[in-house]
Image 1 (spheres, helix red, strand yellow):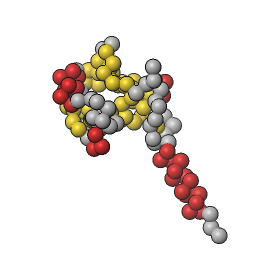
Image 2 (cartoon, one colour):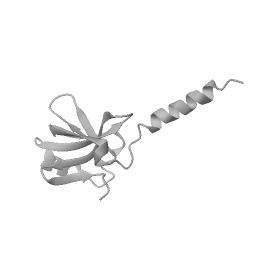
Image 3 (cartoon, helix red, strand yellow):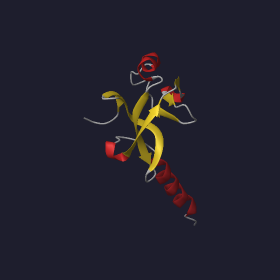
Image 4 (tube, rainbow, N blue to C red):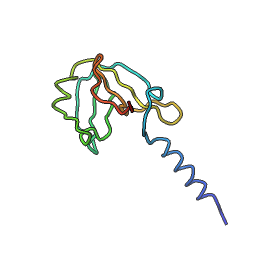
Length: 113
C-alpha cells in the first residue's frame, strides 16, 4: 500500500494552513509607509488599496466589517498611510493589511487591544 498520497495531502494542508492569517500580532508584521492613489472593491468584499506603482494591499472582507469605500477615499486617498502587513510562510510579507493608520489615527486594525 502506498502512503505517498496521504503524505502529499499532509504537506499540502500544512502549506496552505500557513498562508491563513488569523489573530495577527504587531510583531508578526512588516510596517511600511505608502501613498494610496486608488481604492477599489476586491473579491469577497475585500477593500483594495493601490499605490502609485503596481503594488496593492487589501483589508480582508473590509466591506463586511463596516468599512465604507467612499469614507476611506475621503480619508486616505492621495495620502501616505502606515500599513502593518502580515507575514506568512516563515516571514514572507503578504499584501494583507492588519492595521491601517494615517498619522496617529488608526483607521482599521485587527490587533487585539
